[in-house]
Amino acid sequence: MYTISFSRQAVLLFVSVVVLSAPCVAQRRRAASNGNRTAYVVDERLAALRSEPKLEGDLTQRLSRGRAVQIIGNRQADGAMFYRVAVTRRTRGWLPADALVSPTRVEDDARLLRLIRGSDDFDKLDRASLFLQVFPRSSLRAQVLSLVGEEAEQFAQSLSREAARRLNEKEMTAGGASRVIYFMNYNGLDRFNKIGVKFKYDEAARAFKYDGAAWREIVRRYPNSAEAETARAKLAALSNDKSR
Image 1 (tube, rainbow, N blue to C red):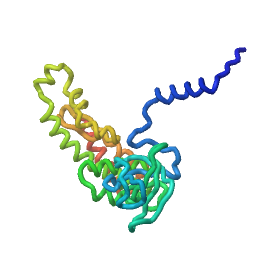
Image 2 (cartoon, rainbow, N blue to C red):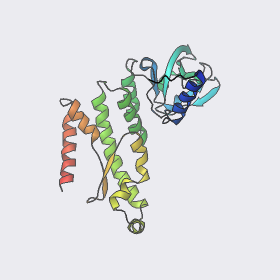
Image 3 (cartoon, helix red, strand yellow):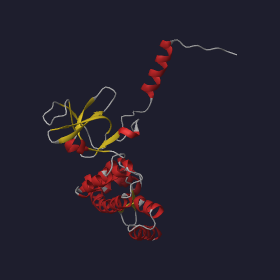
Image 4 (tube, one colour):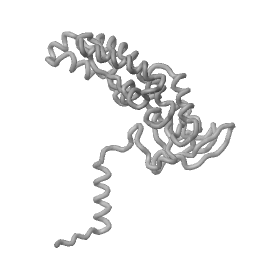
């Protein structure tokens, strides 16, 4: 039997190597360590991290939508509630409470849904995707899933037009790959992939189609909801498209 001992320095070196070689954890919507105090930026217009809980406090940085933070305190000032948050181990500051939602804060799911409905274009889909991540057990989830399906279906049409305009037929033919490969690698899809909204390319129709993930979840998890009938109809239409 071999006995192996590590000095304190060796252990620290090993840990450092593991940490530095691990995949980057500073993802846009990473899971935070303490679920009871975790909050997420949903309104980046308000997400100015300040050194003090004041509207005129010095700006430290501006946080992006979807950023996870840890709430470590709160204070009322300037007619607003401010949260003291930890952004990283070394970065602390104050944010207006309205910039954030938390899965443990009552009515935050309803507040985010109101913000989603008041949003336009990709912002609406992005915030809806964030809702699905933050509130997995919300009673409003079926409504948000239905909204995701509707928005994604509309984006499929605009993506089809954009890709057809930007992908040159002559270059695709010269490149040798199939049309499907070119369209499924179209860079206009990138921002949708980042938020978990996927499309497929229908070669016969020469158009993108939403893959229907939100509708499938509605049918699976909320079969008796008001949204389920529409979801089933949408899935049936997708199935008919595949069979043609």
